[in-house]
Amino acid sequence: MATPVSVVMPVLEEERYLEPAVRRVLEQEYDGEIEIVLALGPSADRTHEIAEALAESDPRIVLVENPTGRTPQGLNAAIAVTSHPYIVRVDAHGELPPGYIREVVRLLDTTGAANVGGMMRVEGDSDFGRAVAVAMSSPLGIGGSKFHVGGEPGPARTVYLGAFRREVLDELGGFDEHFVRAQDWELNYRIRQAGHTIWFTPHLAVTYRPRRDFAALRKQFFGSGQWRRQIVAAYPESASFRYLAAPVVTAIVALGTLLGVLGVAGTTLEIPYAWLLIAGFAAPLGYAVGVMGASVAIGRGLPSRSRLLLPFVMMTMHLSWGSGFLRSIPRSQRRPAPVQDRYAPRHLADAA
Image 1 (cartoon, rainbow, N blue to C red):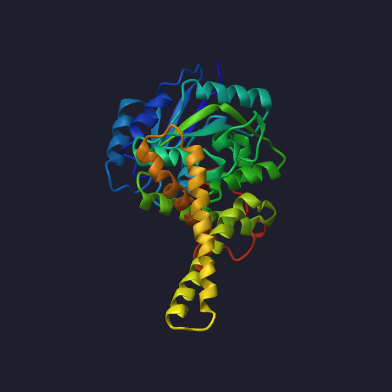
Image 2: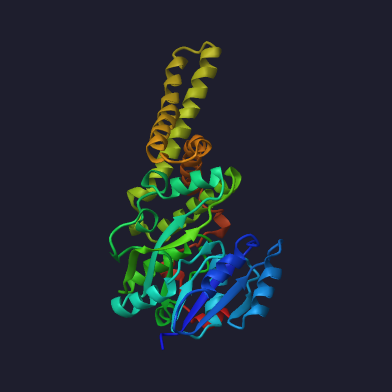
């Protein structure tokens, strides 16, 4: 018999995608036992109704409450009620490919890694979604992480979702519930610092459904930037050019725009030499031209409307992420001391 596996899934406002996500898990061809634990946040749509129907239809599906609705709390609550030695994380708006669980178990067994995962395959079902999919799969849109753009199989800094050894999660205390976003990166960082391996394989690609409009995309990336700032604050040694590029560009674009506006205003008021400040507009204009050129390069093959949307999608991603990083989270929500001084790992059973 293959090693028993527990699949954990945090769920919030997922009436559109929850059932197909769960069905893809149930359809996995795997010789071992599989259980699925759904951690249900306080959804305002039909998510609870759908989850309850799924649980009634299959005894392998277990429901637990996640009153906060936050991802790390949901993951810890789900893991706490499982008992199997391998834990596979799945998102409620993602779909596992056939053979996924069998392959991650094989890699956990053969590599000795603490966490195994693959790529995020972003698939949009609208013109906007297809533009987001291209941007999120390109180094020009979201950076060069292997789980976004691919790479050779082997040790990596992080992976998408992941399949974990339970004893390692117990050893490290699971997901740090302070990190509303980026909790997966933070956990993988601690896994590597503890001497364990994160293993990436490109042929494991999980379908991800992107946000469906500019407002939702802006909110997503602004929040991601805010919490990435907290990662850097907690672990300064993890800062890299890839994380700092978007906030630097955002600051330059904002400063250039401000100087340009002041130059126009000063020229109107006939302030001497104010016209020199109008040169500040070169920063936002240069950035926009660069993004449009990049969009032409990576947008080949997209429908015409998606190609038109692509540069605006990329600018929304860059500038929202950069703005979030520069602003950070509210001071009242920040930790008063570095994570290394304050975070005491706890046993996952405490989350039950």
